[in-house]
Amino acid sequence: MKEILQEYGMAYLWNDGYQFSGLLVTLWLLVLSLAMGFVLSLPLAVARASGVRWLSRTVWCFTYVVRGTPLYIQLLIIYTGVYSLDFVRSLPLLNGFFRNGFYCAVLALGLNTTAFTTEVFAGAIKGIAYGEVEAALAYGLSGFTLYRKVILPAALRRALPLYSNEVILMLHATSIAFTATVADLLKVAGDVNAATYQSFQAYGIAAVIYLATTCVFIALFRQGEKRWLAFTRPRGR
Amino acid sequence: MFIPQGYAHMLLDGILMTVRLSLGALVVSTLLGLMMALAKISASRALYAIAALYTTVIRGIPDLALMLLVFYSLQIGLNQVTDYLGWRQLDIDPFSAGVLTLGVIYGAYFTETFRGAFIAVPGGQLEAGRAFGLSGWQCFRLIMFPQMMRFALPGISNNWLILVKATALVSLIGLSDVTRAAQNAGKGSGQLFFYLVLAALFYLLVTTVSSVVLWWLGKRYNIGVREAEL
Image 1 (tube, each protein chain N blue to C red):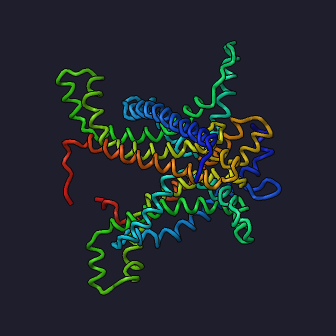
Image 2: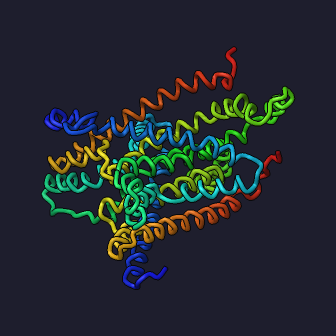
Image 3: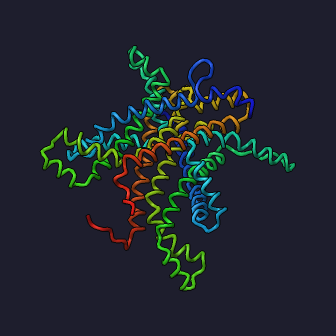
């Protein structure tokens, strides 16, 4: 145990001697996919919650398909499936993108979280009290300003508890990236297992690091909820 | 698109494996979840501590990491135990290992679902049952369970859908489920994209059918409940 930590401790956390690895790569994957998910899901959630039937249905189709299939299959389709198509390999740009395991992992994770986040945000937008929107309309806000000043700030705050859940699930989902040769935490654990045959220790260390990271995220989101959702708490006597 | 018979057989075997694995893991995790939920609401502090530790640790670690951890260490741990006791080596086949691992992981999620549902049933219901002379088990079976299911069903359907999707990961520990079958068929035929999309469609079908069944079950367990009209 001690030898493993001495020899591979760095690899588990941030660098295996050749490249970045372990927790750092896991967090980097998480940040990139969450950023992609956030940027894409905002307009999609507005469309999903809008009264325009065909728009809402189209977005629903996307989220239904992504939420109804395993992330591992999605990653396999993007990483190995798409690359097996001839026209992808003949275009230099696509060829370069889909040959890279890291890009594919970010794309798969990003699309996956986009679908889930869209539903979370759309639910929050629909859940806004009608009076708030009515008041905004009465003040003459309309269209873009209405969303920017009233609906989105209110909806995003209220979506925070569910969104934090999604972030934790994404942190766990990044572990799938090792199947696309990304040197994340689980890949390091697999390498250590292969090198030392001490499976329990090798995977156990990774599990403990994941657990600790999860706890840190939960604590951070608690603080965030205290701050941004202060108005929903019952007032003290 | 045309699927050659050999590959069709392969995919069907894979589908069968996925279904068996999902149902097996569902049984294990439901039983474990019920037990741990009872432990969590019990008066005993020790039982509560065990159940709380179980759900926190399992839910804080990615299912894939746990799967690899349990899969690789289960056999080694078992060997140590049998060596110590002087028994013959017990081999765990990958299927049982997969069912057990998934069952233990998703048991933690079911625990939280059932705990919430147990709490939601008013205590007076059980007291009334006891007053009518029902035994503890009869109280659970006739009064607690039917009412608890109404609150538990949304959580159960969520967990089930996540569980089915998680079975795709078992191909990583060597089981030939539908994901592995699609990969093999795709590599053999050179049409990886097509076969992977086919596998994805299978999961989508399972999700859709499950949603319909669960919706029907929900209607059944909600009989006699009047919802507020908003």
